[in-house]
Length: 515
Image (cartoon, rainbow, N blue to C red; front, top):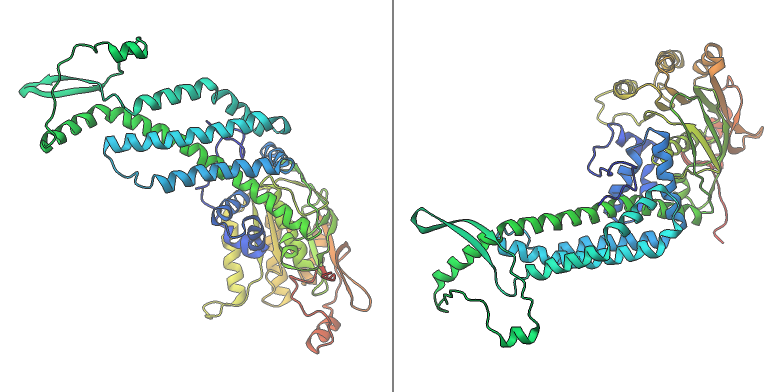
């Protein structure tokens, strides 16, 4: 039996290795808060959420397939959580009640496998009942196929056959087997035989005589003889014990995979509920094929920031259709870093088949997402800040491919503006020539102005909005970069006249009362 709820033609690989830049994505984009909302204290949910989000899809059809499944989960949340709980219960019951399954004794293996199969049979009956009663409320190709498989394969005849075999495997009438003799009167070719069915009624079996047979009765105190008979029995049932154990493992793997794939969607439901509790909406994005220069968002916000704040995060509207680079400039604490993170999270969430934190979002699918954010200086003084930035950029360059998306946040600003701008130009122009899409937050006017001159047709310039008196709206507006470092803002911050002294990660929040 197959699940196929994460992919149309293959199982979700929860053991797959994360991308080489996964740790950087988690740190730079603030994914910890998102994962916490998806999983809470559940370590299993957390592990699946990380794999589901960071192992991105790169095909439009794959993304739309998973989106359709998630829509069904949203419309039938109670059913999804019931199935998830059932799968978890089956796995946990098998683990707790049958923990001694490491014994290789055929008799024990058979006994344990029969007990597990009986328990699994009850779970499968419950699962089929859910499929029969609730499948009408599901529209996605993934769930329609899944429920059809349950109803067709878990038929009444299937369960009757299982129960019949399980009764036989109890061997309440003893074990019937055959063997051949070899040199020295030793046995060989032990084969378990199916008992011949007795067609007589219960009265005939009670009063009638049984078949003619030679009988040897073992003395109750003959321990050696008892061990020999036990060994003979184990030889006879060894093959069937292994076959039943494989059947048990097959059903256990089905429940394990079902729990794993549903865990991702349960995490999405948890995240959606957490954002709704903060008064924010989500929307399903419209993915475009790789190679298209498409980026459009309305009300795009940073879900990680929203989850960690009591206020309401400001969303942004941006139209970068046909553009390959977006340069973001403007005042300190104007929400530039917050906007950049919201872009990165939207790409990750879109390419994992999730909804995104926006009113509307459409973008071309990328071959990968990369970040290059500013870091604190090395506390051990083993390297300077610029050297560390260049080393990280070298690591990114090893993995970035055509049609990827890369986010820069104040990169190469550890040196003077002339040198930093020159480094940024060489790096960014090489990426653009390789058809990599770039979002760059910078204070370097020299770099921004050179992009405007050299790449005017493919560049979009955004600026953090700032009122004349220095107030912030935390919105990005389409505007050319300004030849200013906003010294008045720095003066106010240094001498305590700035009302909001939060880092640039937190300003895109309009605080509201807790009433």
